[in-house]
Image (cartoon, rainbow, N blue to C red; front, side, top):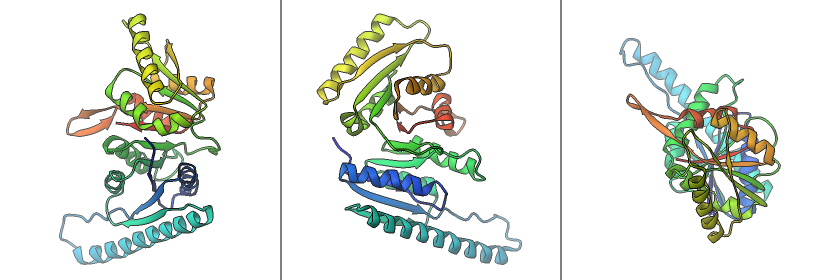
Length: 279
C-alpha cells in the first residue's frame, strides 16, 4: 500500500502556504499526484422575503468575491507546485460548502491534508468545525498539521495509539505508507480501570506481528497514567521525540448531530505534532 493521490485544502488563510509546502513535499517524496481543492463556501440568504432584492444583489457580490478568492488560491497552488517540481498536480475550484466539498473530493484521494484551527484567529470556530467534520465524515484518513511551528520532519518517529478498537485498527492500516518509511514506530496502549495486563500485552503482541507482516518493525508499550488520554498522547510523543501521531478518531451521536469524542477533539485542540486520524 502507498499513497497515489493526496488532497490539500486551499484557502486564503495565513496557514495555507505552510500546509501546501508539507503537501508538496509529501507528493514529491511519495511520487504521487497532488490535488488542491479551493471550496468557495456558500452564501446563506434569510428566509424572509422582505427586502429580498437588495439582499440577493449583495449575496451575488459576496459570492463573486468568494469565487475570486478561490481562483487566487488555486493559482498560487499551481504556481508553487511548478516551482517545487511537483510532477503531477491539479487544482479544483468548487462552489459548495467547504467541509462537504473536502469530504466529497477526499473519496477519490488517499489522504487529506488540513491544518489545526488557530485559537487566535477570528475564524477559529469555523475552521475548527471544518476540520472536525472532515475527520468525522471522510472516507479517507486525514492528516492534521499543527497551526504553530515549522514542520521539518514528518513521520520519522511515529507514535500510534492503540485501544483494540475498529478506528485504531483502521488508522494503523491507513498510516502504513508513513510507518514503512519511519525510523522508529511505537504502538502505545493506555491502561483503563479493570484492564488485564496479560490480555493487553497479548493483543499488542498480535499488533506487532501484523505490522511485521506489513514490513514495519514496531516497539509496543502499555502505559498507565492519571491524565486525560489526549494529554497522555502528547506527553508520550514528546518523550519519544515523535513527529507524527496516528490514532483512530472517535465520534458519537448527540441528539440529531454527529460529533467527535472528547479525547479526539481534545487532541485536535492541543496538538503539538501532526496527527493522522481515521474514523
